Image 1: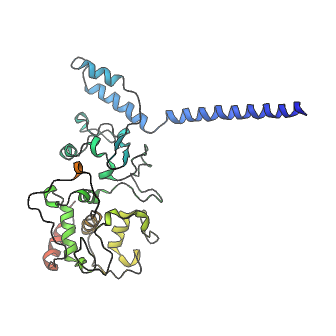
Image 2: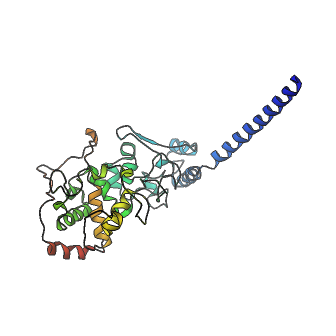
Image 3: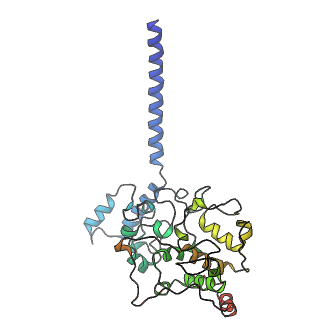
Length: 308
C-alpha cells in the first residue's frame, strides 16, 4: 500500500515538475516577445547611426550598452505611473524630430519644454492607461468597458483647461470657442459653473472630475468613455439621456468638439503648488452666465466650423 502511494506521489511530483518547467519556458518566451522590446532595439540602432563615436565616445558607448528595460515616470503628486516612454523612447530627443511613431519627438517642443516628461508624465495630458506597455492596453483606441481611453485629437485642449483657466494666455482656441458657445446656447440658464447660472440641470463646475463609471452608456453608439458620452449627448441629448429635458440646435462637428472640450475642462481639482499655473496679473475668469446674442456668434461659429 505504501509503495503504491509513493508511486502516485512520485508521478504527481514529476507531472508538477514538468508543468513548472513548461510554465517557466512560456514566461521566458513571452518576455522575449514584449511589444516594447523591438521598439527600444530599433531606437538604439537608429540612434547609433545618428551619433559619432569620435565626437562623443562616452555617450556612444553608453548608447551601445543600452539594454531593453521597462521605462517609467513616477509622478508622486499625481499618484501616477506612466510607462509610455517604454515605447515612445525618442519623445524628447531632437534627433528624432522627423522619425515615425513611436520614435518621433513630441510635435510641440515649446509645450514639452514647459511640461517636461519627468515632471508631468504623459497621461495627465493625453489620458490612457499609463501602466500598460502595449498599444492596445494603453488605450490608444477605445477598449471595451475601459472608460478612460486616450483623449482624441479634437478634445486635446480639454486637458489643458483642467489646469489652465486663462484660455487666452495659452492660445486654447477651442476652449475659448466652447465657452462662447456655452454662452450663446444659454446653457447657464439651467447649469451652474462656479455658482454662476441656474440649478435646473446638474452643476458642471467639476464635470472633468466626475467618475466615468457614473455615466450610463447603454444608448451610445461609440466607445464607453466619458468623452464619447459628451460628444453623443451634444449631438442628441434625448437619445443618450431619454429623461433629459435638454434641447440643443444642430451643431457642426467642430462646434460640438469645442463645447465638449470646454465642459470636459471644468475641474475643481487641487494641484500641488509647483504644478499650479501662474495667472496674468489682474486676470478675472470670464462670466459664463452672460447672455450673448445668438446671431452674433452663430455666424462666427459657421465661419469656423471647418477649422481644426
